[in-house]
Image (cartoon, rainbow, N blue to C red; front, side, top):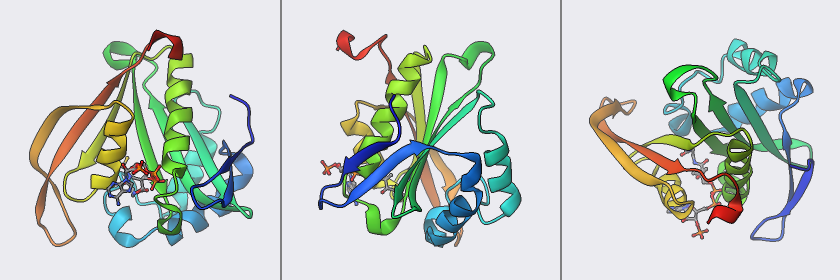
Length: 184
Ligand SMILES: CC(C)(COP(=O)(O)OP(=O)(O)OC[C@H]1O[C@@H](n2cnc3c(N)ncnc32)[C@H](O)[C@@H]1OP(=O)(O)O)[C@@H](O)C(=O)NCCC(=O)NCCS
């Protein structure tokens, strides 16, 4: 993958996609501070905790998480990551996470970033990708996953709670990877 990569969004705005760098710590904190609370609730970590962001920055180059960011005028506007286990019975499976700032949604930025991570997963020799989504909350993400040939693998009924305690199903989606795009 050649970075930095300039992409033109649906509304002709330009963004640059590149790997997360050690120097991005403050920018990444500012990015997550701008993510709505409702979206942050469904993340696995408290991204407002500077120690969480520090850990992610320290993990750069560690070989198990590969993060890319999209920047617009030097601000991070999206962050996506591929998580690998590196050992054992699920070492062939990568997991994807993505967050795009509300003002930058529906402009294809999510698609550009996910395509990069899918290609990277293929280059790393992974055979499956997995992403978990909250049904009724992350429907936009489910829709974009279907478009990228992810399929519904399982549903954990009532597994997730919203901030008010209402339960939602969690859907596990997976995608089979081929050795290269030419296999399609
Ligand atoms: C899900 C998310 C990453 C999508 O990013 P994005 O940059 O807006 O996505 P794109 O513009 O590339 O859209 C890709 C497809 O997603 C679907 N989509 C996007 N927003 C949608 C919405 N509000 N409702 C329904 N479908 C939607 C569409 O199918 C779209 O394709 P189209 O433009 O051809 O119609 C973004 O909405 C987000 O960050 N959401 C909050 C965090 C989240 O849910 N993360 C997923 C957990 S891993």
